[in-house]
Image 1 (cartoon, rainbow, N blue to C red):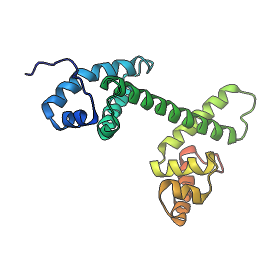
Image 2 (image 1 turned 30 degrees about the vertical axis):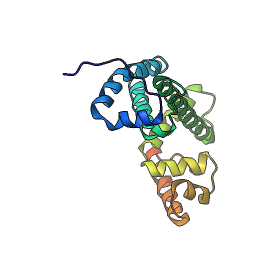
Image 3 (image 1 turned 45 degrees about the vertical axis):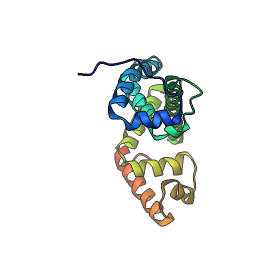
Length: 186
């Protein structure tokens, strides 16, 4: 068993590339820096350990993938923390965007009367129905009806032709109706 050492000083992109190319040096560096990056994220993930782990993994993957961007002006761990911060911000942006989309979908439903519990119940039903759709159908449906994108814009966004996207949207609407219980004209 190798003894773990303190994080090594990396001064430039070339040093980082050499580190990534040497399995043993990389393992020592990774073992020494991972806890610092994880602690940074865990402290900001409100107790969601799975999220902190996922973002830590994304941080290291991005650092390795874009090692040519490290110029040595900062400590390598500082650079990793900056990447981790960006991953966390991206996560919250995506999460907020999804919540806004679902709120718009709920707002488009017929009024449920004066019972505030009905709105919460309807939101949960819509969320369950959307979650049951295959990923490509869910994405196309959300882009088309919640982001008000044209079929052409949806097709471009998902990398399909317009006819294929129209077909996908038709299947998505049918699947949503079935999942939601035929209670909407989506």
